[in-house]
Image (cartoon, rainbow, N blue to C red; front, side, top):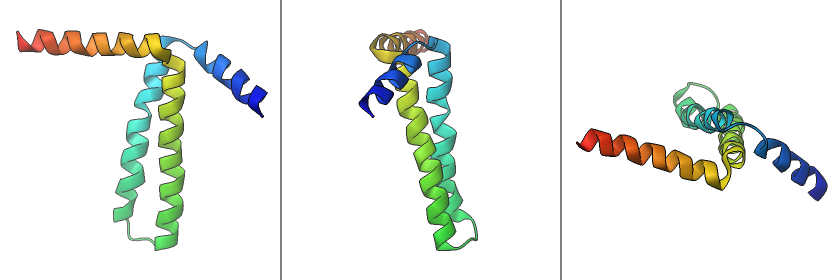
Length: 90
């Protein structure tokens, strides 16, 4: 099982920075859907199942995106966001 996770991690790490950002951004709609579906007029059991599915997808895309980006990609993202916020402040 550990070999499988290592192989998956290596494959994800080999994907591009842009792919990592897209996968990481996909977690936002899944988080929104996982909690917004609570307002639907359906049974509590169905709400629970939908929450587990969408929250699981949100966590999967979140950690998958972070794995794709890696430490260097996260530093790159932070630098990009801090540069944009510095530009807006001026």
